[in-house]
Length: 88
Image 1 (cartoon, rainbow, N blue to C red):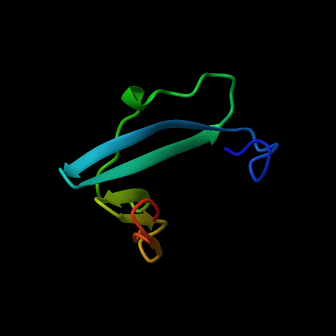
Image 2 (cartoon, rainbow, N blue to C red):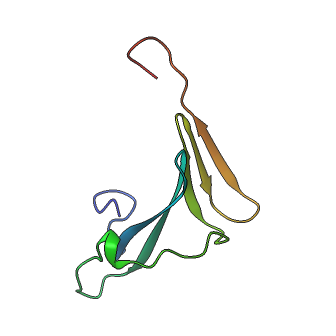
């Protein structure tokens, strides 16, 4: 993860991500970090998507909302609002 900046020297591999569609306007993304043991990262089709009550996930609600579930008590919400015809 960010091997040239914050992840430099950590030796972490990210498997996936796993994706679970909740409905046509919302899906969850799960990432799986593990120490680099020389194995290639798993593809999205190779990771098992955890239950929906998992504490941490990234939630996309179309058309313009992201919610990062960091823990049961902490979330970061990002709303994308149009500035003009071609920019948000």
